[in-house]
Length: 454
Image (cartoon, rainbow, N blue to C red; front, side, top):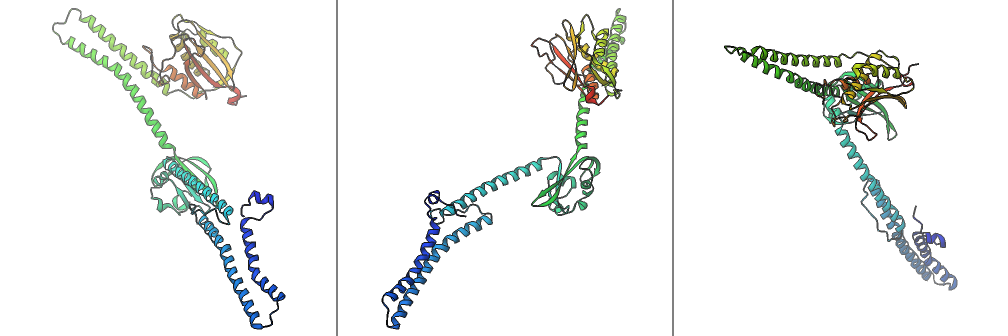
């Protein structure tokens, strides 16, 4: 539809193209009307003159018709060319806006510019989508309604161990993926693919594009992720074990060499007994430290599954505060008053976790250690607060065997977190939030309502 000039709408005037068509049509009728008026006003008696007049009027009418044809059809040809270009996807062609169809050409030019911008945005989005799919470690497959492959990313090619052009058009059954499409929409299963085998997370969902259905299938190799995490954990453990074992074996080896050199002297020095006794004490102490280290490692590795039951945190905190083991030296552990707070947990394990947190605070405190419990939303929180120098600036506080204290085992915080996580909770250690020096250890657990117990 041609664009109507608002000024023409107010004045009631026709658009320019319609005025041109009407004016040209009336002009073509002028020769015939003039000939008719001439014949009526001045009748010609001679037949030849009549035919000449009629032939002249017809010739002029034909000429005006051709002129009107060009004036009407040629702009429409231009308009048809612009529309043909749009239909063929060529949005770069523009029409001259000064002709009789200037308003229509203006709208078509605006439409072409908008379509060009939308195509550019679509191509950029498609390019971004392609880069994203190529960067994904998950295998992505798109099937049509007949379960034939229409899209696959590089991870999917590697999983099927085939080139892209060999996969397109094959059915899910031919690719060995039909069972995954027919199974649950979210599952973890053992599967063997041409390019890899192991444990995979499989997800699929229905798609619809262009009025037709389809399927999206995403396969993620969870086994590889677990193997990488396992390898990283082993590397960290071996570094810690190597460090601790070398710390004990190095002085043992050095002292054994010293004692061997001393025993080879002839005659023996007068104080050889004292030297031997000191050397053996060093060897015994380092061997004992190594044994305690390995015992601590066994404690972390053999933590049993918690035997949960109803547990009042007020009673647990009071019991731990009274234990001499929980506050070495002369540090006082003061539990703050509070209402009973029930959780579901293993009393022995949670007591050990709380002992570790309180002992860690007591060893760092200058004065007393305060313990409080409270309900925070759906969590039961136990806070252990001290007035020591605060936690060290390290991200390895909960790494097993990492310690900043002389003679520390490095398993207290790690064991406390492991126990809390086994109860669907957690442990954090941060600086106090009241501006005073010291550390704040928080052990949080689900309340009984969250854990589902009655």
